[in-house]
Image (cartoon, rainbow, N blue to C red; front, side):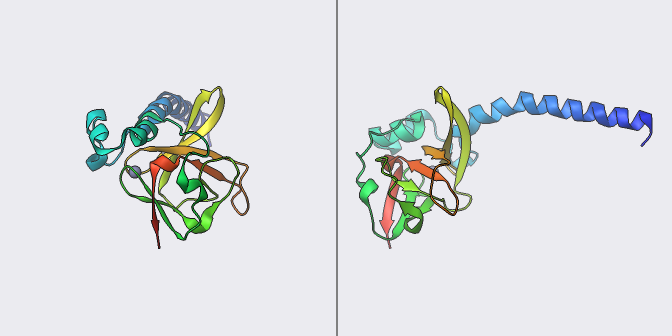
Length: 164
Ligand SMILES: [Zn+2]
């Protein structure tokens, strides 16, 4: 590579890095807005579609009280769907008792969730939301069981369980 070309490559990499820094925060801010147009309801429309409790969790990134969800103790086989758009998010065979008081899973159904980092408790936490309607579900931690080592700590109010 001659000197002139390597300089051009260097400048290109520099420009791409700057663009990445500029556009990343936009992506984070927009992540609770659904990318699917048919699920892009206004706040008022979501309020009509959801119970006040589910609205608080799904659309305002709230967290329910620990041990308050009956899904915490749900042991039957079945599928956990998004309470906002009914997309299947978790299977009962990946649910476990984490002792935290929230329904916990060590893996999700592939492609059903998207992540973003929040700083609500100062320490960064990875929030995840439904990939279809953008509804907030919970937070994912790295202290889960094998084989993934993940703990998806989910609000029961954001889920609809359907037994097999
Ligand atoms: Zn959803």
